[in-house]
Image 1 (tube, rainbow, N blue to C red):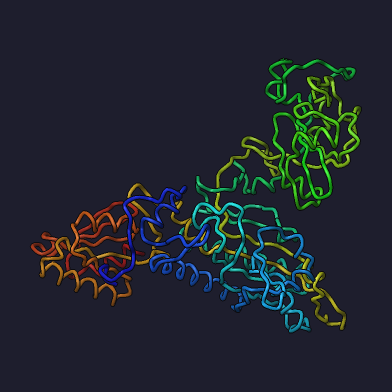
Image 2 (cartoon, one colour; image 1 turned 60 degrees about the vertical axis):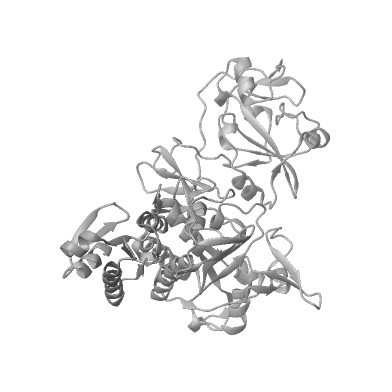
Length: 565
C-alpha cells in the first residue's frame, strides 16, 4: 500500500471527547471516526488490526474443536420471553418492532438463539460435545458510552457456546477454552491475567475474566503476592475477621451531634474505624435492604445482589429512609429495625463493643455487641476486598491492579437448556438437559487494550502479530527520483517476502512522515536517504525499542524478517 493512496487521515490534536489514550490515538492515527455516541466507523488501518485479531481467534478456536457459524443479530422476543430474560435484562437491550408490531431485539448476547437452534437439531448423546462460535457485532444501549471502543453501544465480539452431556464434559470444554484464551491473548501481545469473576447477567456459576492490565482499566483486580490466586474485586472472597476479646459492656445511647460519617463519628468519640459499623440502605425490586460492614470496610454491591438474588440495587435516598424505616440518614443502624431486611458481613457479627447509628438524629449506640443486640436476616461475605487483605487461598497479602476485561468464560450448566427445554437422549434413551458453557472475547476491545498497554508520547506501539502493517518505507526526499525509485524497489521486495509494507510516497516533509509513522505505530521504520544512496546501507528503526540498524542491500530482507521475529 502506498501512503498517497492509504485512507488514514491523521490528526495532530485529539478530539475533546477522547478521555483515554486508545481513544485519542485511534482518532489521531486515522483508525476510527465517530458516527454516534458509542458507535464508530473502523477505517482501513483499524480494520486490518481487527481482522488479524479475528484470524488468531479463529485459528485457536478451530484448533480446540470449535466450528464457526453466524447467527442473526435481530432476535425475536419470543426466545427471550421463553428463557425469562425479556422482562429482566434491563434498559441495555435495544428493542424494536417490525411492521406487524412483533417484538425483536438487537442481540446483546446469543444464549437463547444458540440454545433453541441446538434444541431443534441435536437429539443424541452421540452428537456431543459441540463447540460452536461466531464473530459478529453485538449491541448494548449503554447508559453512558465512553472511552471509545472500551464501552460502546455497538462492538465486535467472539462468542462460543459449548454443549456437553454432563459436568465432566463441561469441565473439559471449559479448560479447552481457558487454555485457548491464554494462547490468543499471548499471541496478540497483551499483558493479561485470568482472574476469578462473577457471572453477572449471563448467569450460571463458575467464571474467569481475562484482564489486560492497564492503568486505564475500569475493573479492579486483586492477585496474591505469594500464590497464583487472582480475582476481580467483585468476586474475591474474604474470610471473617475475629475481633480481640473484650468484656461485653451494656448497650448505651449517646449524643453525637453532627456526626453523619464514619470519619466524623470516629473523630468525635476517639475510636478507630474498625470499632464502628457502617450501615447502608439500598433499594431493590424486592424492597429495601440494610447492608452492614465494618466501618473501615466497603460494601461489595455485586456480592449483595448475589446474596439477595436481586437484579436492581441502588442507594436509598433520605426521604425513603425516613418514610420506610423511620430512620435518619447518617445515623442508621440495625438495632430495633423491623421494616427492612438486614444483611451483615460475618466480620460485623464478630465485633465487640462497637459503635452504630441509633436511628435518631444526632444519636449513636455504643457497646454494640451484634450477636447480643440484633439478628440479621442474612449473614454473608459482602465486603469489598482491598490491597493488603489476606489471600483467601494462602493468607498472604493481596495486591491490586487495574484491568480491562477482554474475555470471559462461563460455566452455564443447565440454566438455559432447562428454561428452554433443550434436551438430548442419553445412552439409555432418557431425556437430559444439555450442560452448557459460554465463552466471549471482545475483539474491538482487544484492539483498544493493546494500545492502552503499548504506546508512548509519539503514538501507538503495535505488537507485530496484530500491527496493521509490519513496516513503512520512507524516502527522505520523495521528489528525488533516485531515492523514490530505490524506496519503491525495497517496498516491493519486502512485500514479496511476506512483510506487509507501506511506501510513504507522499510529497511531504520528512518530519511529517516520521511523525505519522510513529503515530500509526508501524513496528519497523525503514528510511531511504542520502546515506543509503551513497553507502548502500538500509536504515531500519525498531518502533518498540528505538534501536537503529544499518543493513547492506544484499542482506536487509533477512535482517528485517529476523527483527520481526
